[in-house]
Length: 424
Image 1 (tube, rainbow, N blue to C red):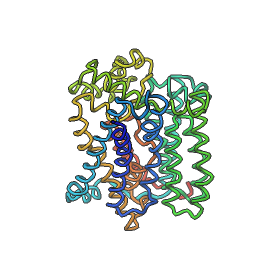
Image 2 (cartoon, rainbow, N blue to C red; image 1 turned 120 degrees about the vertical axis):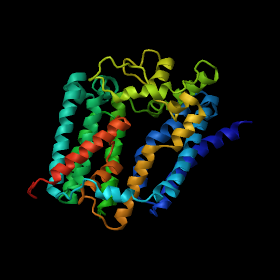
Image 3 (tube, rainbow, N blue to C red; image 1 turned 180 degrees about the vertical axis):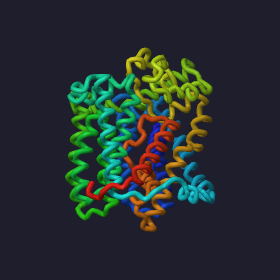
Image 4 (cartoon, rainbow, N blue to C red; image 1 turned 60 degrees about the vertical axis):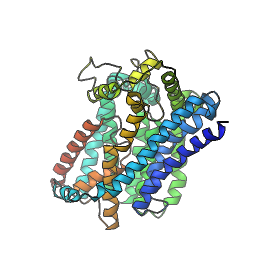
């Protein structure tokens, strides 16, 4: 009797996911093939595989499992209010006057291309130095280079801040490589370096995001051989992802690969425990304790291992958090755990970071329509990085992310005032 409703619930999640994208796309009058679609393509595997593919092999009865269905229902509620949040942004927030003038009056300089290339070299060097320090103190540099996936999965504890900073600086460097390019050919050659280097950070998601950024940059540059480049680059990116999975799973059979996407199985376990009364709501404890994520363990070694969403991890998988094994959850479990559907709705609608990203994207697309060169103003360079840089600020909490963006902005402003030869 419930089968049609269950299948409708799953199909609805798919439609809602694209409804928000399509609404935003139309607001900016973008074509079918556009930068947002390319950005979306980065997240499709990590969003769709856990919700639509993993359950087929990991959950008893698959899509017809009651607890999986509840997890999808909570996700759908979040997606509905995310869509309403987008509507609210375009109808009300975007009409607030004076904000753009503020942006244009603040600290900003016009850099030379040579200054951007120098900044790229600085951030790339800093990224590699931090990566070496992180790998050497955790797993050992040689061990990490031989098995990046093992290092990523099991040996980031205590050096997570170094990992996050090295990844973000690598992302900034790659972004500056495009904005400061001498030619599109030189950027393609540099991209081979960046796409190879990011493999050693150990995550298939980073490989995909850097690969799609490469294609996105060729799209921005109106590269005449774009289709041919995509034809050859996508298999290479896919090959790196498959090899990354092989090092993690020991095989690449479809069962093993799908078993990797256990997010909604874990969410179903949580909602089952919640509905059975074995886990209650936490009434703010999840959100408040998550502030521990702002403090690097290297600064405060006594930082607890169990805080935020890890509280749920510890209940369902005792002892796993302390050894760095924290199975992920699908959907807004983190928000539901505090106040149920109420907190899911509040955090989905009043998503400040999402509004900021929409505002900056709006600034970019409006500037692009007017022919603005985003490499000719340090503020625009920063906006481009925030909007499009791959894996930018990954694993860095919001307030610390804001501080890091401010530091990057000041540094770029300083570099832009240096008199650097165009031959650099």
